[in-house]
Structures are given as structure tokens and as C-alpha cells.
Image 1 (cartoon, rainbow, N blue to C red):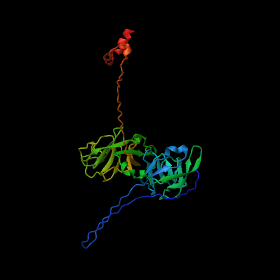
Image 2: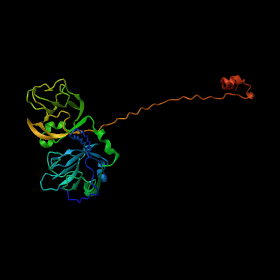
Image 3: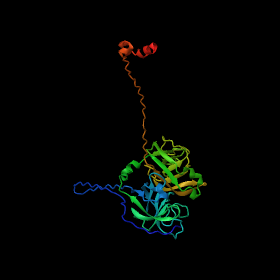
Image 4: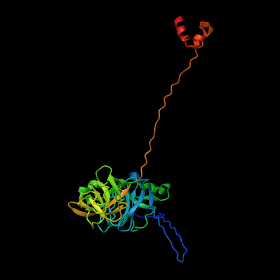
Length: 340
């Protein structure tokens, strides 16, 4: 377990923005309509030591809340996370801290969120405060040989902070702690990227993995029987989009994982799923991170070939005795050669 570090903060970053719209109709009573819009917190990380330079400039976006009530964040560009852990090795006697880590946290637990049973990460900020993540503070960062007190900055005020709308792509990346749950048979699902394919007959979106025959879809009844709860499903069988229920047509609820819900608008960003592990169902937190929109710029290169014709003045002096007309026709050099 790493040593304790001092904590300082010069300013506190903003958290959420909200807009409220009120309309009133005077017909004896007052009708007030409120619309609340929340914006996920985003910030850019800077100030890291040279050994961890790959973290410098990463943009982190709020992805949800852990069971302890603390928010957790994921970098838009790569798999790097910031989260609060009550005890990084799960020993129930450690120091509460914010952590920067390459391992995804499991929001369903309060301790050892990366489930490695040890305190292994890039940097930590020791504090029991789960509400405020300081925009400037002294973190202890592993810089190759030892832990170094390093002032890290979480900038929330750049122009990039307005890119949240551009973040909503149609690709979901699945992440889960399959191996840590003794569920290595499903570990091939980890890091698969599922792309939106369209809507089923019921009007619900369905997704296919880019690199495998794996699917995510919403099924009103996975067995086709009355009374079977609706659910999101991860399945190796492609859904029949012309059906309303039992989309894989097996008359049975057979698949890799499911989460029961009546919300078919989109699969949950993070939720406790039941995963098929060693012939039994295991509760496991699965996250579906929406990947950034990528823009491909095609550059067309045009090569132009230009041939220049040189005009040579063939005017010959009267000393050669050549007619001026022959020189103009270009016969002058030939006749001079013959004469010589």
C-alpha cells in the first residue's frame, strides 16, 4: 500500500449545469413547468510527470456514480479512469482516496473498485471527500522509481468542454470484470465495440459487435411466454428484427447476459447484469461506454503535368548566306551542318 500524501486545493471545479424554464397560465390556477438539463462534468488533465506523460492532455467525462455516491470518469481518448475508492486493496483498513487508474472501476462495490486486491494505479489523492474532485491538488504519482508529490490540474474551462454533443456516437464499448468473477468463458466479450444497426419491429435499437458475431438487443419476452419480464440481452444469436418477442427464436432464454428493465430506449450505460458463468448466473457490473465520434478527413492529391515547348530563334546572320525564311522554318541549323 502506497504512502500517505498531503492534499491541497486552490479551487474547486464546477459540477453540473442546469437550465430551468417556467411558463404560467392564469386561469384561476398557476401551471409551472420545469425542465432540468444536466451536463456531465468534463475536464482535461495536465501536470503529470514525464514517466506518465501519456496521461497529459486526456479529456475525462463523467460516466456515472459508484455505490458510495462518488462520481467516476473515463478518458474519451483511451481506457483511463478516475474514481474514489474507500480502500484500494479491499482490506477495510486503508485510506480513502481518489485514484487515476488504467483499470475500469466496478461501481457496485465500495472498496478495491478495480478488483486487483492491491493498490496499483498511476496516482492517488488521499481524502475522504467523495463530492469535490479538486481542480488543482497535490497528488502522489508513480514516476518510475518512487512516488512523487505532483500538482495535477483538472481544467473544466477550455473550449473542448463543449464537445459533449460530439461524444454521442452510435458505438458502445463493453467492459466488465469477467476474470475477477471467475467467468473467463465470457472474457471474449470484454472490450467488444457494438455498433448501432437500426431498430427492431418493436422500435428498440439493436447493436452488433464490429469484430464478432455478438449482439445486444431488447426483448419483450425472451422465451415468448406471457409474463416473462422484458430485458436487454447480450447474445451470440442475431435478433430477428421482424419479431416483437423471442427475437432469437429459440423459445428459451438462452444467451450470455441480461438485465431486466422496461426501458428499451437504450441499453444501460452501467448496470448489474446477470451473466452466464460456469452453468450458473452471476451478478456482475457491466459498463457500456459510448465512444467518441471519429472524423475521417480524406485528402485528394492531384498531380498536374505541364509540358513547356521552347521556342528557339533560328534567325541567321546574313554572313551565312541562309535565307531568313529557312531559319524561321527551323531548317537553318540543318543546312549549316551540311555546309560545314
